[in-house]
Length: 336
Image 1 (tube, rainbow, N blue to C red):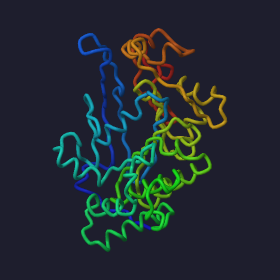
Image 2 (cartoon, rainbow, N blue to C red):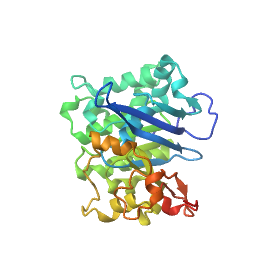
Image 3 (cartoon, rainbow, N blue to C red):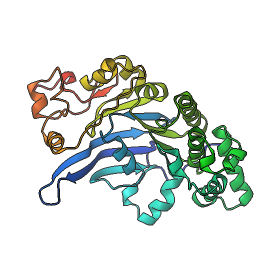
């Protein structure tokens, strides 16, 4: 089994990831007459500390969770806000520094595992390339050992990795993509819907690997999903995302057992599917964009408890006595 790697660079704070006021604004409907909407709207959170955690961002398709992940991976730049990883503001690094350093500390696991590999290339040489070029292991024997350790960690043999992706099942390829991700021994893995394309009978195996890697390698995870059952199973903390903002953030048990935000209550209590999954999509039509721009709470038009203040002023994240933070005026002591 792999041993946790040492810290990369000087860590100024005790957190692995700090996200502050992160916002991504897109424009729809044309250059001159288009409207702006906030795909991610003023999101802040911290991950890491004394022990690794699995932080789940759960929400409908189109709510902004993948945009948030892509900014942390430096695939797109925020409109404003700060992302700090191991004490480094990643968008203050030069593009060359970022491209060299970031893959060693942050790795992705995507929804479609086949996108992680060249379909015409056998997997093992690809993993070996990751070991030598990304992880920076120059000795060939050491590079091979690192690859074999990563394969062992995801419960696969080198014989499986000697094949091409199209010869393998989706579950096997996803395990290989996880092996690729842990070869540099990152401090953070961002897993965006990693089991949604995997057969239901194999999903728990993938999630158990994440939990094992968290414990044994001290890897933090951001797990992005719309599946409430897997979110509950794997999470230490959960953020419920709605129209670009966090509606509720807290320990998984607290949120699932006693959801506070009316939107979270709707998701958990009113969805009749056994696996507690929803397939809706937050639209970005002109009407929807205008709703994004309205003042006040984004859920006000659907909320059964709506008050006048909800339509006038967006609620901040309010910390409750249970430790859960909820963006809802129902829990505020402030006079409206």
